[in-house]
Image (tube, rainbow, N blue to C red; front, side):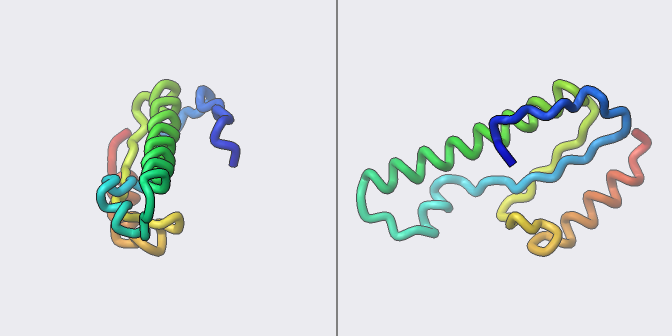
Length: 101
């Protein structure tokens, strides 16, 4: 998926639950790598900030078109959240399905 594309959410007329991976704090991300130079650290910091900006933009765009959308961020989730955070996904889906909206 091209992160630069802005989906048209304006036609959505049903309740929305959007589940995202939540980024770990930068300090925790650094621990996962063998950083050897200041340039490597700067590149990792830049990538971390760019990813956060992308997630923020996606969430902002969704909420602008669907103000009642429910957004959940799962810290430490993998791309396959239904595997890495199965209990969280089930809990949030059940809660969403029970909500009156």
